[in-house]
Amino acid sequence: MPEIQVKGMSCGHCAAAVTRALASLPGISEVQVDLASGRVTYQSQGQASREEVARVVKTAGYEVAA
Image 1 (cartoon, one colour):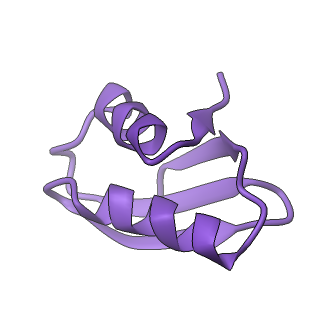
Image 2 (cartoon, rainbow, N blue to C red):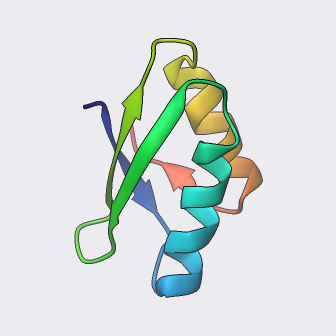
């Protein structure tokens, strides 16, 4: 499963916002957020690029760490 580090999440609302943002991309499913570490994993059918993932996370108000 692909994994990204997301900065700026601090609560359940944050996790839900990131989950919704990623789930809106075609081919993304099974989003799992670990608030303590900022780690987000997701199942991808290969349709969404890392750049698209970073874009929707940023649109939701968070930042993907390099």
